[in-house]
Structure formats: structure tokens, C-alpha cells
Image (tube, rainbow, N blue to C red):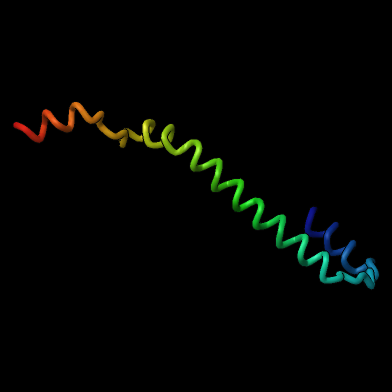
Amino acid sequence: MKIILLTVLTLLSRPAWAYLDPGTGSMLLQVILGGVAAVGVAFKLGWHRIRDALGFAKKPAAEEETEETR
């Protein structure tokens, strides 16, 4: 049903004759880069939780020293 509706709307639509200036491209680039940066920061802030949940937590320094001396 969705394919039929999309086909009908495509056939009945007219071109928009819209113009995208360079400022629009710059804005889109900023949105994309900002989203990538936000995902990176969120991942960095939550990395220790992910690592702990997967069981890859670092050992405390005191435990490392006792294992090395054995």
C-alpha cells in the first residue's frame, strides 16, 4: 500500500525549483560534524561503564603489584 501511495505522489508532484546556496551546505556540514562530535563525547563519557559491563575493567594498582611479585 505504501509503495502505491509513494508512486502516485511521485507521479503527481511537480519540481520544486528550489535553490540551495553555499550557506545551506555549510550548515549541513556543521550539523553532521556536530553530531559526530556529540556521539564521540557521549561514548568517551560512558566508556568506563561499557568496559565494566563487558568485564574488561582495569585492575587496581595494588593488585597488579602483588601479581607481579609472585
